[in-house]
Image 1 (cartoon, rainbow, N blue to C red):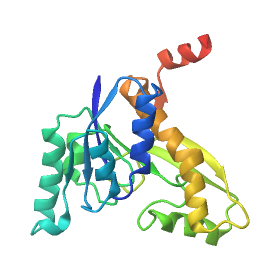
Image 2: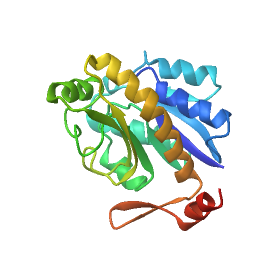
Image 3: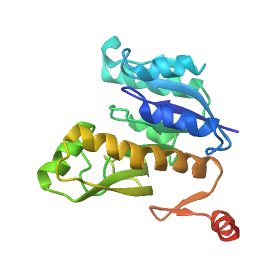
Image 4: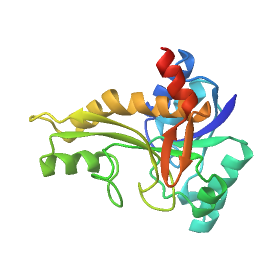
Length: 217
């Protein structure tokens, strides 16, 4: 059984999707051992409480320097002794020390089809505003490994979502969550936790074991 920490800044809809898929068996071999937020008002903390999961708020405002905040964040995750970390709407620049300690063991969900609409400044509703401003017909979501860049790590899974002519950023955001994020993030976690992914040469591959199971089905 792999233990994971889920880091969230807001409402925690992706966290809830993970918990739901663990409960119904879609995600196997995983236990959420810790929920971390940088926002004490994040509803994700309440979701964790309701599910009986340890949760902690590590807020930048509570520390005198960026270095102290980063040390506290890494320390909280280290203390939980998790196998890997999932960023599920975590609006924090991940400390380099955390990336080093959990190299190739941090997953992130981004609400676009990387490499489009990603990188510095593209987060949350801003992504969907940019998609509509550009007139894109298709958007989606991406699960990727976190490295030292911004949305530059190896891609695990992607799913496309149609953009409608009358979409607002809020409507599009909800569709991307429902049709893409809540599906591919649990799937990626399952693959990762069950050793069905291999990272080599800067790319992610599903293992032969996974391919054989699909062929049998």
